[in-house]
Each structure stands twice: as structure tokens, then as C-alpha cells.
Image 1 (tube, rainbow, N blue to C red):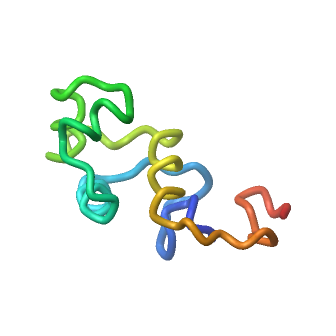
Image 2: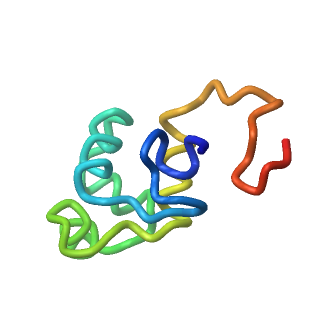
Length: 84
């Protein structure tokens, strides 16, 4: 299990991000809804659907956000495919 999988209790390789994790991640990064939508290149209604839990954040964007909250990834980190 790695941070890219959603951390402890993650749902597996390249998992989507649910609403609670998404809200927590945005708060941790310090992005407003408006700025998060611009950064992720989605419209604000899409972002609000993710925040409300009507849709999960797609795996590629979830991975990008998870990397932003884990800036000190060691070079020998175990990646999802088991290779460093």
C-alpha cells in the first residue's frame, strides 16, 4: 500500500478519491473551490459534484492531489507496481 493508493486502507492501485478525502486534501493544500477547479482543469460544477460525493475524483487527478500533500516522498519509495 502506498500514498498513491489512497494511503492506509486505500482501495488499490490508482484508486479514485472519495468526497471526504477530497475535501480534506483541498483543505490541506489550501485551495479554494475556484482555484482547485482551475488547477485541476475542470469546471466548478464538476468540482462541486466531487465535494458532495456524487462522483469520485478520477484516479489520475486523485494521484496528483495525493502527491501534493506528500512532498517528502523518499527516492526509494515502493511504487504501486512494486518497483522503486
